[in-house]
Image (cartoon, rainbow, N blue to C red):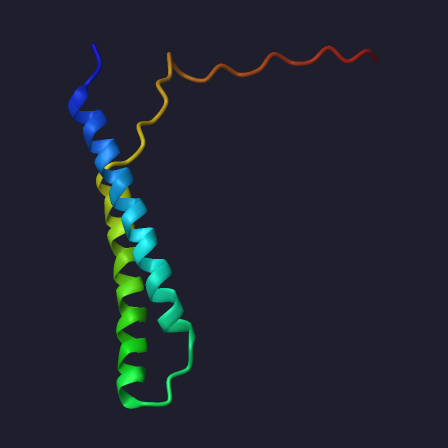
Length: 86
């Protein structure tokens, strides 16, 4: 039996990531153009800060749900010496 809650959380986080990427693409156009007016410069500043905030959200989500470490059966075994003819 699979863990349905984990699957739903993964799907939800995937959709959230997709939505945030779409928001960044809309904001990137505003933040990359030079703006001659005060309102335009304020809009550019806010869109840059929004992109920074979205990056922060992604960083926080990555830290909240770390990838599980692979299971190890025991201590690492040293590799046997190779047979080198003299």
